[in-house]
Each structure stands twice: as C-alpha cells, then as structure tokens.
Length: 225
Image (cartoon, rainbow, N blue to C red; front, side):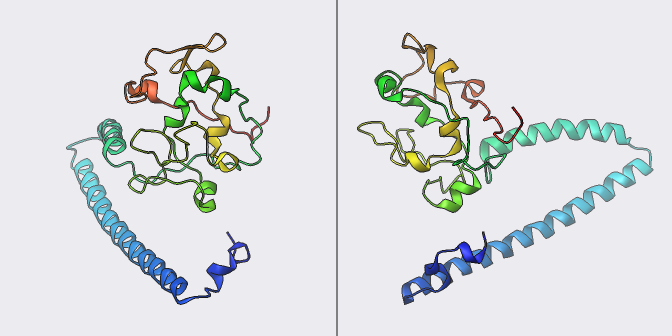
C-alpha cells in the first residue's frame, strides 16, 4: 500500500493519543523485527553447522547423500505435521485474490435453509487474505494469525447469533463468497430435499475427522475458463 492510499489520520495524527498509539506500534514492530533478525541469525548458524557435519560424514564415507535425502523427507513430513498441530504460525490465503472482483460467488438460498443447516459453514476455519487483513474489518484470532476469529460456540465472530446472518456480508472473505455447500456431504446428504448429515450436531465441526475437516479448495478466478 502506498503512502497516498493511507488514511490521513495515520499520516498526520491530530492528537497526542494518536501519536502515542503510533509510537507504541512502531516500538512493537521494532522489537518484532529485532527478534526476527536474531532468530534468522541463529537459524543460519544452525544450518551451517548441520551442512558442515553432513559434508564431513559424506566425505568420510559414513553415509551417502541418497540416504540423507531419503531420511530428510521422512523428517520433513513428521515435523510439518507436528508444526501444524502445535504451532501453525502465520496463515494467509494463497493465492491472494481480490474478493470484490471474484466472479465465482456461490448463489445459495441460505435464508430458506438456515433453519436446517444452522449456518454450519460459518463454523469453518480458514485463513484470511492480505486484503482482508489490510482492510481491517474481518477479525482474526490473535493466537493464530490470520485465521478468522471464532466465538466459544465455534461460530464466526461476525455471525449474528439470533438470526445466524452475516454482520459483514459486504466485506466477507473470499472463502465465504466461493464456498458452495450443495455438494458438501459434511453438511447435506441431499441438498435439494433438505436432508442434512446426521453429524451436523451442535459440536460440529469438532466431531469430524481431520480429512472431513478439509475445506474444499477455492478455484483461482484468474485462471482461464
């Protein structure tokens, strides 16, 4: 984002309070960048040590490069699984698309079906896009940036609990626009006849397996059709 696009209140704060907030943010970012640089330095040092050790072992004939590559792949998969379970890090939508120009928005008569499905799609978990984050309307989990924020009932933070409608419909994220529940058997056994999946209980989606939890991929709207 260019400086010309930033709100004037951020460019020229008009109160002591705004200056103080700006200073707090700048201080926090400076600390964060310092820690990132320190971590990068330690990672580089560790990588250099490991590569030197591997090179020495190969040179001495203790182990072959092929054996190392095979074992490395096993550990990559194991560590990735552990990382995703315990430390998801920062998640952003890929590819990054403009949600306002996305042309494949699903057309579902939600108002006529929400009494059956209980807006279960609004319990799904997904990362926001850079556009969502910069826009600053859609909330995300502070402990899992930038995964969409949920309440204790697993519903999206922006769902009206009385009507189960979306309070930010005009700014809703791209997955909400693209998701089509009609052929999602996690929700409907028969969409046309209004037959829901028996697993669609109050604790849904926590009663699903990891495979069942996977959100269908969003098509790249920029690709040729």
